[in-house]
Image 1 (spheres, rainbow, N blue to C red):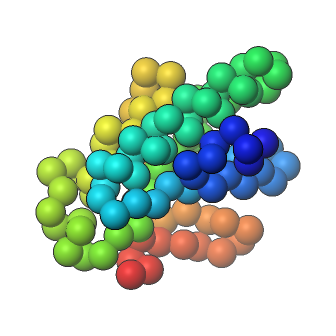
Image 2 (tube, rainbow, N blue to C red; image 1 turned 60 degrees about the horizontal axis):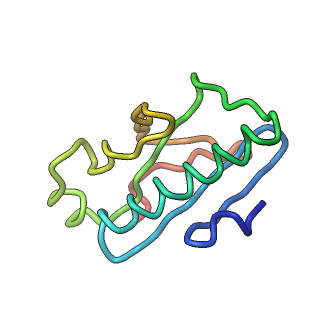
Length: 104
């Protein structure tokens, strides 16, 4: 399915899907991410693949300077899927490795 989200990187592993967006500004990355989420959600629905409403999460990885200049909590409160804002996380577990937003 990577071809349907050309502005972002998408990974699918079993029943887990991750979409990554990057850009020079938070606003541009969020725009790309929202577009990719809409396209992916439509594609999933067309193929009768359910999206679990309870486990949709979001994490912003950015420099401390970028984080401090955002108005929203960690700057990503405007990422929306099916009319609902995604829950922001400070850390996620990926293949048994804990990744947090202090990477940079």
